[in-house]
Amino acid sequence: MKDKIDTVENAETNFQTAIQDTSSESFMKDAFLRLIANKGAVIGLILISLLFLVAFIGPYITPYDFLSQNIEMRNQGISWAHPFGTDDLGRDILSRVIYGARTAVIISLSVTVISFLIGIVVGSIGAYNVGGKIDAFIVWLIDITMSIPSLLLVIVLNTSLKPLFMRWMETQYLETKNPMFRETIWIDFVLVFGSIALIKWPKAARIIRAQILSIRNKNYVIAAIASGVSTIGILRRYIIPNSIGPVVVLFSATLGEAMVFESAFSFLGVGVRPPIPSWGNMISDGLRVWHLHPHILAAPAAVLAIMTMAFSFLGDGLNDALNPRQWK
Image (cartoon, rainbow, N blue to C red; front, top):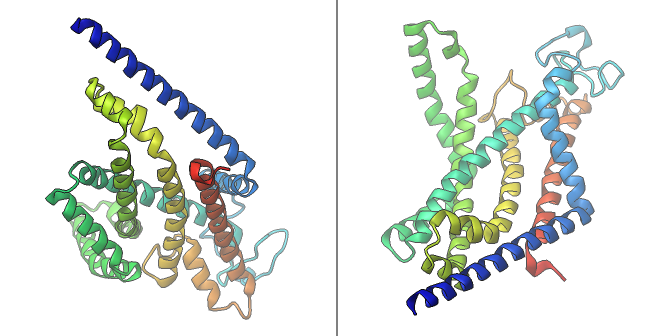
């Protein structure tokens, strides 16, 4: 009799799992169709794909080296030889914008991945310890971190940590004579990665914690746990498919926000510094001479604005496609 009961329970569990898997596949298919039907999201996706392509192959197709200077060609306007003109050192602005795309993509991807890794770990721990001291501490830490002005945090981290890194690298160079320790640009990248990730991880942790809390008490999850489905199986079949929508939307938004943050910090001199081209430091250079040579400012500012709107369009499209409450 007991074997028959177990057989019936297993059959019911398998039936529920099949329904859940099928509905998940149907949901993702409907979401994809809704996404490609959204013209703004498609345009944003095309522009973002083009950005990643340019960042990947751009340095191989640029007409000039981004450090190549020609004082005789300084502050030249738009021409066939220089489609975006040249800056005050005679450098080709188009080449620098393309190299700046690589900087923007590297930083935005790195920051987003780091912040989501932190958010997944912290949010998951809090969700599985809900009501406990660990969860209370995590919620408190999220609130405190989000209450600190982001610009102030980044400036403090950069100004306080950079001299320490510089002294350490100088010491290592004197001891090893390895020229790698003379490449201080890596300090800028590491500090930008770390400081922006510290700003962005609380949002990821809050979203992931909320999603796990809303799904863990669903009947099909409880039935799966009772039937002995492994934690990995529960995550793959139930948690991930049902929480992927808000996470994907947040991931897309964080990519765009990290790109804007990097440009803003570089503009203020606490991000990536010359000679490595960044859209932010290019805008900063252009502001000094915009009234005489507006093209120096216009090119990087226009590209940054277009990409910001592209991420916004894609994020809105993903939100509409992955949020059933938006469906009519």
